Structures are given as structure tokens and as C-alpha cells.
Image 1 (cartoon, rainbow, N blue to C red):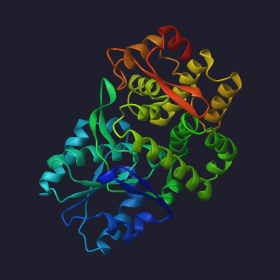
Image 2 (cartoon, rainbow, N blue to C red; image 1 turned 180 degrees about the horizontal axis):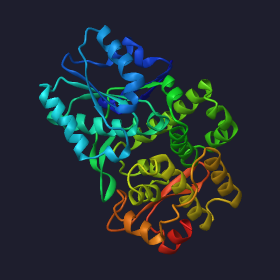
Image 3 (tube, helix red, strand yellow; image 1 turned 60 degrees about the horizontal axis):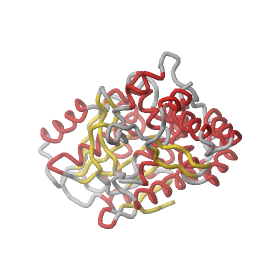
Image 4 (tube, one colour; image 1 turned 90 degrees about the vertical axis):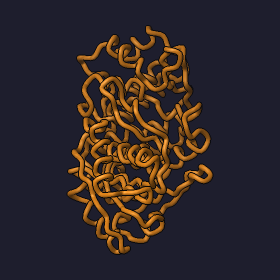
Length: 358
């Protein structure tokens, strides 16, 4: 089993990566520290595959777990679903000794984490990510929250889990489109942090799509290690952590414009990274060949590289003003400085945005 640590002092926690962890009582016994209610929050899709094995593992420990099944989809990452979790916890007389388990992708993880941060001002929770995107990104680092019709992830909290439990077997049931969406976040790490990892992805794209578990475990471990290092340095996004949002300013605008769930998050990030890289190309920060490599790797992983045909530059400008990185009314962008490095810029012009989204 691969294991690494997110080092945040008293809020530190482990990440476990292995096949079959959902069915392992040992891993749950380590991290369910309180003897109150244990509530598994999942969705209608994940329930079919993984809810019963998890409940059985918890029951083996003498626990009597409860489960709440929510609808599946980004369109349900909202205050209504959040309130549904709150109502469930109150109806079942849950207290501060409750532990929540987020069994699902990024939507379930973000919702459950926000519920854990909010219920009685904070209860324990464990991330059990079942999609590649959530395994490499959203389950790690403590960002939780919900969407608002005017902007994505605008309501939420920083709240760290007790552990992140990554069962590689979940990737066997992941639809191709969801795997591609996860690769959007994976590629991001190569662009912002490690040109060596970017080359590894170029060399192993075929292995990833053949679900080579040795390669996938390495990819997930390297992504989690990069994110853990960034979060250790800047837990609440006061500076460095913003680079993890490469492609997200453009991508979130696409998701909001199209309606949550029409474009998957990773699809928006894929197209958004091309747009951010086009700004970098125009500024001479990356070469034409490096830009072409970025586009080629995104395409090779079955992700879009252009805006929706019905979305204009004016639509991007109107929606990006609600981005979380806006400061003093100015939209700030993560732009590659080189392949393997990126920074936050507040001086991107309207003309550059127009060129980027062409």
C-alpha cells in the first residue's frame, strides 16, 4: 500500500492508495476515532458498486453505519443537497461525535466536507474518492463547498478530513468520460509543478487508458504528493496554492455558462488550460513547441481544447468576475511561466482573454 502524509500540524492526515481499501475494516478502524454515529454519504451511481462493501466493513468493526444516498451530478452540488444532509443528521439525532464518510466523486466529497465543517460547528469526516479527479485533487487539501447559480464553489469552507482512502478498484467502474475529466487535473500538475511528470504522462498515456494499476498508482501518488506539498506551504490559498487553479478561471466560466453538469469539471479545466497556455505563449513564457505539447496531451486524453461554440469572449468576461481569485475587482489568472512552473497574474488584458478563447 502506498501512503503519504498531508503535513498540517495537528490537522495532518494520511492518504492511502491501494486496491480493495473500501472493504478493509483495518483502515476504517484507524480513523473512526469517536464512537458516535457513522454516516456514509454517497450518490445513486456509486451506491450500486461500493456502498454495501463499505457498510459491511464498518459493521465488522461493531459499528451501525447509516447511509444517505443523494442524486448524482454537478447540478446537485448546491445548498438544497447540503440542507438534505443537515436534515438527515438531525433526524437521526447525530451529535458532535458523528463521523461522516464521503463515498463518491468531487461533488459528494465537497458536499460532505462542507456538511462536516458546518454540522454543530464541525464533526470528523473521511474522504473516500471514487473518481480519478477526486482521487488526485478534490479529496486532498480541505476545500469543501457548494455551487451557486452565479458562480462555482462560491460557498464553502476550508476543512480537513481525518484521512483520504483511495481504492484503485473504483477506477474499474469509472466511465471513459469521467476518466478523461480526471486526467484534466492530472495534466495540470505537470504543467504547474513538474516537467518530468509531464513527460511521464506523455510516455504513459496508453497505459493509463488501459487501466494499468501500477502506472495509475504512480500517477495518483505523484499528484497527491504535489498537492500535499502545496497545501503544506499554503493551506488556505493565501498565495502559492492558487497555482492549483490553472485553467479553472476559464473552466469554471464554461461550467457556469453551460449549466452545471453539462461540461464536466475536468473538461472545463482541459479547455481552460489551453486558454491559459495561449496567454503564456503570447507573452513568450512558453515556446510554440511546448504549447503544442500541452494541447496534444490534453487531446490525447480525450478532453476538449476549445470553448463551447455558443460561448463568446463577452460571456467569459461576464462570468469570470465571480471567480474566487478576483481581488479589488480584478480577475487574476494562473499562467504557465514554463512547462513545470506557473504563477498568479493580475495584469491579463481583455485582448489577451479574447485571443485565449479564440
